[in-house]
Image (cartoon, rainbow, N blue to C red; front, side, top):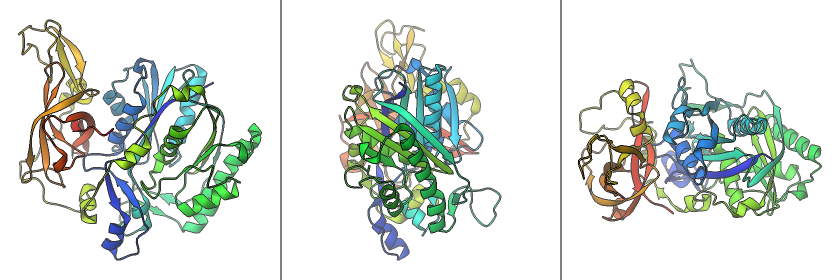
Length: 480
C-alpha cells in the first residue's frame, strides 16, 4: 500500500519573542515565540534543508517526481522545484512541479504524489512544503506567522505510514488572500483577510468538518479509533473548537499545533505537525491528517512496523531546542527587508550571469568538486590538475554538500559585513581527503566558533539582484 517512506521537518535557527512584538507596538503580548528565517533564507532554502533530511538513506535515483508546495515562492515565473531538485542532486529525469496559491498546497501535493506512486508512473515521489509568509506590521498575522518546512518521501515499499484513504472538498470562500495590481497595498508580500469569525466558521470549520467526517464514515472509523489527530489551524481557538466538534480528546489524541513555539507555517503547517507526530508514533497507530485552504484535505494513515527501522530526520523536538533569539523587532524587520538599512561598505555585487550559473550548475547548486583518481585527493572548486600529485584531467565528481568538515581558521568582520546582524564569519573548512573550502558561516553565535569544530554545509541565498535569487552553500555548526 502506498504511503510515507520517510519524513523530516525544518525550523529556522532564529526566533522572535512575541513579547518583543508587543513592546514594539505597545500592545499586549500574545505569548510564546515564532520561528524566523535568517536573512539568507527563504522558502526554497528551507525546502532543501527539510528534503535533505528526508532523503537520508533513500536511493535518490528512484525519486521520479518532486512537488514543491508553497505560497511564497521566490519566483512568480520560474520553477522553484527545478532549483530544489538540482540542489538535492536528483536525476535530471525527475518530474518537477510547483504547487502554489493555497495553504492546502502541501496536502494537495501529497495527494498528487500518492496518485503517481499508485499508478506506477514513479517509484518514489518527494513532497516538500515550505512557507515564510509576511503579516502586515502590527497585525495579529505578523505575530502568528512563523517560518518552516517539511518533506515527505512517498512510495510503495518500506512505508512507515500507509495511507488507507483520503477525502478532499473544495470551497470558495474569500478569507485570506494576496493579489496583484493594488497600488494601495504591497499586495505581493503582505497577506490580507476578511472578518475573522465568518471566515473561520464558513471557511475553515465547515470545510474541515465535511472532509474529516466524510472520510471517517467512508472507512468505518470512529474518532476514538484514532491514536493521533493532526489538524492544521489558523489559531489555537479555532483548532480547539474544531477538534472538540469532531469528537476528539484534545488531551490524548490531538497533535500540538506548534503555534506557540513556531507559529503558523502556512502551506507547511500540516506536514510539520505530521513529522512531529510520526516521531512519537508506534506500529499500529492510526493517524488523521487534515488541512485547510480553499476547501480541505483529509488522510487516514496507519503506522507500520517500518517506523522502528527508519530515523525520522533530526526531529522537531531537537529543532525546537536549537535556537537563537533575535535581539529586537528592528532586527527582524532588517532580516525580512521591511526597512532599509545601511548596505555593506563594499562595491555592490555584479548581477548573476545566467550562462555562468548554467555552465557551473553542478559546482554551484550541487557543491561538486573533484577527487583525483591517481592519489585520492579531493578539492574544490573542480580543477584540471591535482594539487597533490599533479595528475591532469584524472578527476571523478565528488559531492561536498552532504559531508562534514572541521574549521581550520576563521575571521569575524564587524565593519564591512553584508549581514544585517554582524559579524560575518569567514571560514576555512577542511574536508576529509584534502579539500579546503572558504565559506561564510551562518546560523551561529560568535561565542561558539572554535578552531577544530565540526561544521556542515547548508543551501542559502547569497543575493537578489535584477529579480534573480542567487543560491549557494554556506557552512554552519552541526546541531544534533
